[in-house]
Image 1: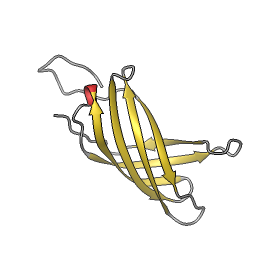
Image 2: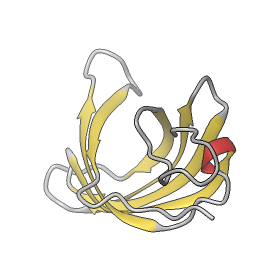
Image 3: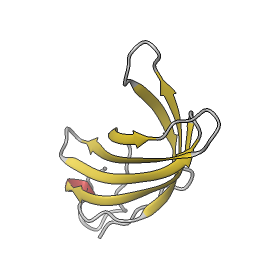
Length: 112
């Protein structure tokens, strides 16, 4: 979040880290549901937002929605739902290690 004096232009998300706990139904050929709860952190954890992700896809993909659930600091009062697309990479050498990248084609949210 960008902290601005009162009366300035709307705040913008410019940088943050997103960590998720997820349940993934993974198949090479059949689409399965994937759900996650994520924390987005900015400005040394002064700004926190919680999001819920619900999507479907085969082994390496996930398409669905991300819903803003709660926020603190610059994210206080955040709401909204936005389309979500992710790619999932599974590390073969380390059991339980999954990495991914995400894309929000139309990232939207509302702040009070």
